[in-house]
Length: 271
Length: 313
Image (tube, rainbow over all chains, first blue to last red; front, side):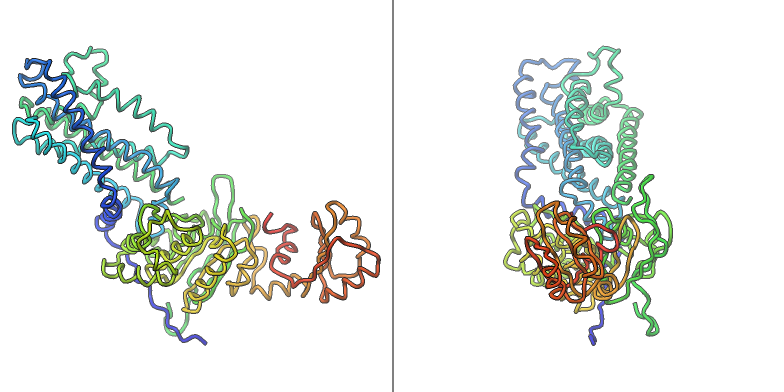
């Protein structure tokens, strides 16, 4: 007869934030070996835009009331940071999240541990924040050498970038959690939502020149709210109330998306 | 789990039901798994084995009935139960872009283990899974058998009191299966309670102390492999193989030579205590099969008897 006394399991349940942080840790494990390609696309990509638009195209634009009286380079530097993070946020929240359910099944592996669906979503949001912050920082530092910033408000723009990125990311995560096909809808979202958004959100030119009939497209666009915040701080001229309004809109989008994603993850993983 | 010398079952389910919309995947089953036992769910695809496993793994709330795992209710204490069990899913869900070692470490951290603990544990588990020499290889580069062993190793990272293995060797070649069985057998010897689903009768016979045969969401028989065989089958089976379609014509000729005769698409199965003696009589009656074989009864025969169908189509 066996006399082996079975050892009790060493596993235990940690709190929400500590558990969520483990998701960040898991992603970091991967990222530290694959960072070059990622940082290139998410941090350096908007810099190409900055070079082409800010320096190239910008050389043809005279500072005027339309550019807030500053060089075009200074006008687009903050909005191009946002453009970059929004692209990164949306693409990282679509196929990679779907893969966690469908192809690589990371989330199915995670749910077999003490981890709860809400922890996974929170961890993904935290990881996304760090990546967007890093991408924004790389952009900000290099853009400084271009002379793209007028003041230290650039640092604030990085954080607006994180907020704007997350406001776009969590709704897409929620959508990914209810996507069961191959995810073709993400390509459509990129083409029909994200790219048009960059044209109507005041990224390249002031929204005053957009006809009133389609101005609502601007108003619902998180990119515009972020751009207003970012420009308001770097170029000035944003009152407290609009400032708070833009902030509130982005936060509301982030939280609604987060709540929907949590529900979507819970239904898909525990059923 | 032993309190006052009396050991309570690790898993106990009563009238357990799982419904997905109108479809009833599990239709009121009673199960009890005791500490140190290797318990099996045997049945064809769609029998309700995986649905039952998911309920035990606390990732699928029961639709009806009662369930206790480690004495707790999965609906209330899911994460606490999951912290103390190990799950090896049917489909490997390793992180293919991480190395063998990293997979084990990351997963261990999810169970609240410290960095030092997971470092140590990873080394031990790679040894166990015979993957030490592949420690720093990305999982992508591993063979199917190696991935499977790593998935099982990963499920042991928290020293689980209960290990759930869903179709552990499906899709593996014979050599890889035997290696895996050897590892599972070692776990059993160490006193880990195992719950295994399989549609391979040889796997069930090799690994399970006790099993239930499931079909259509119900338990149709329960017992040890040998008890099930002696209850539902004969000691030996004589297989007579014919050209496809001709077997049915010979059924009448072998009548009375065996306790029971099953007609399969290309052969007759004669259930009898003495296969060789039956074969002599068959030959004496002038029946000339293409080939014949005398073998021991297996769980496959039990399943055929209970459901009228074979396990693997």
